[in-house]
Image (cartoon, rainbow, N blue to C red):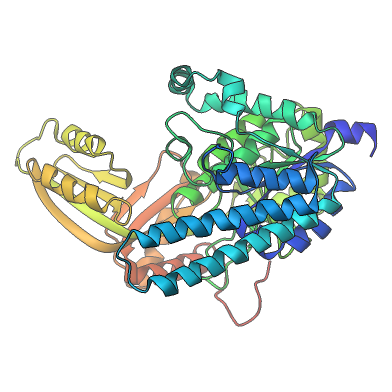
Length: 504
């Protein structure tokens, strides 16, 4: 491997547990070796998090990786470690079922044991296959301690003071560890230690995506790749809209809005990391490794202005743009035009189902000073997150996720009945139409709601966020599919499915 390439060109690839279980041969014998021909690769794998004790799941998984690709490489040791993981989980299941009053215990235990054995066999096959790659396991279990000392109080103080910047020091430490692997492929688990206030509370689900972003930022990678079992980001969910088209590229802001309003794209903290580090993120399909996927650029003019970027990033722009005939055609093929790359139409739409719409009308008939403040105070007091809010002088409409907030919503209703009349509409859906600088598209809102009116779809709430790139509205869940079809075909301008495969 040429010295300059080894020093400067990094690609970070993150693989989910499902992909590793189903397509490990493709990953270890095709995808990773192909990239190793032209660039350095760091691999992040989703993994179970747990205790750090010697016989804990996490430690056993780390030991298994070390047996496969680390300094203590041994096939016999790998088999023993995998068997220990299997036996410990089966033992835990037997104890749990023995202490409860679960019906059909024997049948349930057999099913669980079969699943555990199958998953352990998949883990063994993956690690055995990975032995063909010169690799080194990198443990991030102590990364928080390295960056912020082992004092939990000081860790929490740093987290409270720095907010999302807390992760900057982690990225730096991770970068040092990955570079120390020299010519070997770093293999990192998605679990990166015990966070202040717990990993799930501080980061939430999808923390392995954040781990991959921290790795990319730490080594100034030219690209972060998230490998899934879909081709990338589509104009709509292909399962709901068969005519949905694959998007060659989206802006970071568009990806963030799609994630928040129902599409499973990327963890929000991951997006913040790649924005700060100016690293493009590509979503690719393990089942279709030769596909281009979807690229999420750090900011809108990333393609046009590379003067201020690190040399490694600037050089990667050319390789990314070469997928089509130049940067301009690359962007215009995906609906952009003009110097600032505005889209001619919205980019995509998504839905968020199982929504409760709560309408609160003030009990006072005159000007109700403090009414809005009281409503928002009640929401804050119960930690209820509102997806959409519209208000007037005497009323507020709030769209809430019913599945996640069921108990909180019951308490919220009791609390709000003291200040207003409450109307609850259940079984609703939020439909969001998303596109960069959509507020500057004259007439786009009128076009959206005209098409919905023609289709007989009633709107219960309308909102446009300060982000300027999202128009959302609430409809009955039975009307959500029709609303999506109408907007997708007549506003995004994509013909409905005619029986042929997706046309890109």
